Amino acid sequence: MFKKKTAPLPPGKYRMGGTHFKNDKAFIRTAVRDVRRLVEYCDLNTESSLLDWGCGAGRLAVGVREEFGRIRDYHGVDIQPELVEWADANLAGAGFRFTCLDVSNERYNPDGSPERTLAAESGSVDAFYAYSVFSHMNDDDTPAYLRLIGEALAPAGRALVTCFVEEDVDDWEENPEGYGPLEWKGPLHCTRFARSHFEEHVRAAGLAVDRFEYGRETDGQSLYVLRLR
Image 1 (spheres, rainbow, N blue to C red):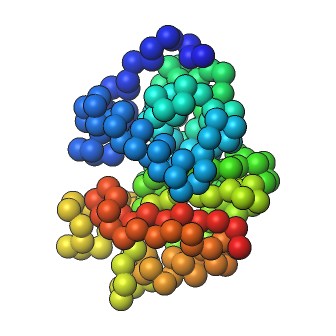
Image 2: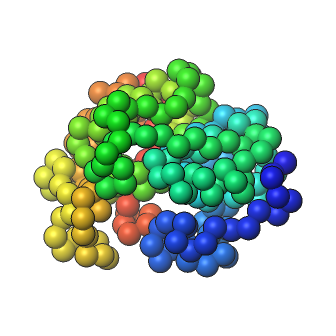
């Protein structure tokens, strides 16, 4: 199935997630946890098409392998070439593929193309996963990508995404001072939305909130499960 019978886990610098994925056990444990949440919240199964948007070095793919062996189509996309190259070399195979997208993001790919894409056909995605992606996104790209998610989802599809949202704050703020466990530095290190503002973007994209869990994710992000309206 894989290019190597047992693919090695990526070196620490490729794992992403700060202190959260620095050892092998945590890397695999969180991957399996999120696959199980996709099963529960998004009906992920062996016949699903799963789009892992912001896949990094393929953490979620490792979780899919641990939990299912394989599914019909896991597609990991990211804008950081070295991460995608590692994942493609070590994790790609039957049912698992990776794509590097040259799209713009001020933090991770400032010289990328302004033309937005998810690399997904319309109505083709049963389960969509974006962990810590909207937490590094400006307030123009956010509604545009939510619309693309709506276009990509199959009729019964679901999207699991995380972001920073709070009540009674500015609609959108970059690197809010004194917020969260870290000192935010550099472009889009932390982007925080007023909850009502983010959910306005969700509705404008033709999506609805299926589930909301406040503040339980990495660095205090909140979890949303979205569906077509």
